Length: 110
Length: 110
Image (cartoon, rainbow over all chains, first blue to last red; front, side, top):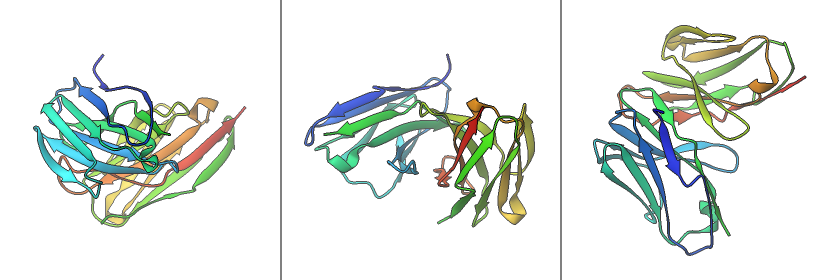
């Protein structure tokens, strides 16, 4: 199936831990994104990568670090997790303007 | 930055009813997308519609870019239409982030 996929779907962890979320797209797109959806369902851009280069980095704590090993993958690494990081994280990709989203990763920090 | 306002915030319908959801945005855009977030949290692409009118089954959308609004029409609603409908816009270049509205929560009862 052609799609944007994310792993894991659910992530439950303790405060202070470090975790990663992986994203892969097989749509042949050259731009990938990370969005965060908070508890009120508001969606906001975190990062955008085009051809493995960072092009958008919104006001996000530097505990969050995106890594793009190639055009098809964009991973999100989070250090020293805090309670406020609990949210749903969505990966997306685009070729021109229309963006397609992955299924989301629900992160719960205890 | 661009502001996106959606109305109404909540909508309750009986199965079979029709509805219109509105999205107003504050500046010129070259990307406008409508999404449905189903009860399982998936973001489903409904329309990529920076201007003009499109139809897909019981759903249709119209964007009047010069007047900075878009409308999503749902006809003969079904319980599976329940969820949150998001409008998202992007500025005038490819690869830029989507700015999301706060969504309209639709509940359709049988």
